[in-house]
Image (cartoon, rainbow, N blue to C red; front, side, top):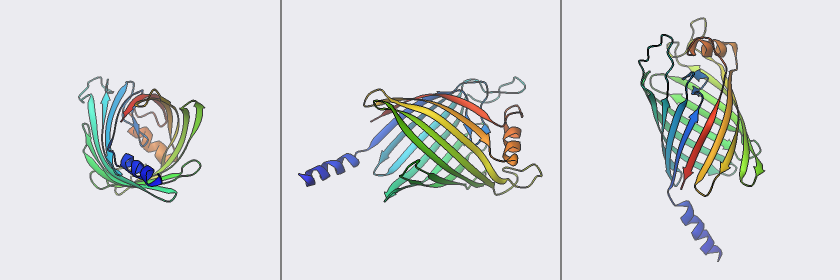
Length: 245
């Protein structure tokens, strides 16, 4: 009996998985940088996985790209990312490593490698290190915590917080106010959302986030990089629909 259950569990774990998600959000903020303004962004994603390996394709469509002069020279579809990853567990720690290729419309393409470790305990502290080896060489490190509270049935309230440190290899990538290469605590994120399972396959996830600078250098960089040069903190949100099988 027990061996039969074990075989059934192994067979279940060996099955390939797939997920398709599409989200609509009020703004696209990435690592503290404002990549859209005054428009809705639509972000589809597709992931397939098997035995710890996964491949993901993610995209961003800006419904009305922002310009200061009123002349729109960029495409609505302005980013496509490919992520390859492998995840495994050792005792109470979940690990993952991977590679990301960023195909960008309004900037040079780039590539990153990353490694992550999450402790399966209260608040699930997670440390992730990204290394850009291409057009924007440098390190981006995040430490985050999260927790889900049951609301009703399978619905959960999901809270999260994250802090980051950004270190550029050269000033041409990211620079501080004095012109030296940027290296400092960067952006913080507070998030709140709901996970609402509709049935076995579909889940609806509304989410609200707040991104803010963690240092005066981060404040200067985030403001100077914003669309109109005036913003260094952002409140944004939206809803995504996910189908898994």
